Length: 174
Image (cartoon, rainbow, N blue to C red; front, side):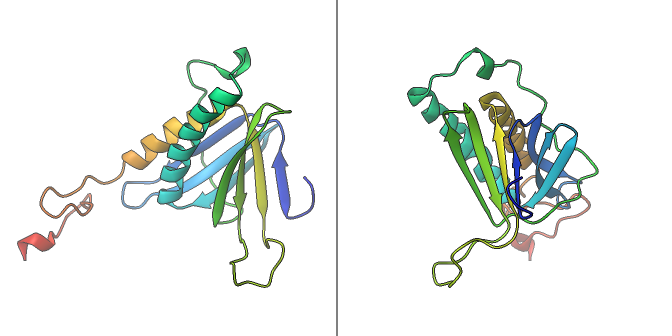
């Protein structure tokens, strides 16, 4: 940890992006663990979808410039499921991804608040979590996160809105 608002997981043991709850009532999280310390960040479904897509594409581009070594190509993918209890530290407003070539780790940064362009703040306020993970951990997070997003409510064949599990009032029938 750098300061009381910045948390860094240097050697992440596990990394997950996913949901807990029934479709239509699910809550989405990013979760990481390092030496028994678990951190959970509340995120939106769209953030998990984008993180899954962007991290997969990022890893593919990264392989061109920094070919993967033997430690990064673990198969099968490590387990990457959000575990309960999931008590979030904060809600992420922004999520970024990068690479630390010296560490050979992918960086996922989640920020609670970030100043707007018109904001007078020079530094972000709130928590910042930096998770350094292997490519295999990030790839697993990407695969399992995309699967969690895809397990939502099925779309109505008439209106394409998500159908509730118990009932669905389709606006096309009115």
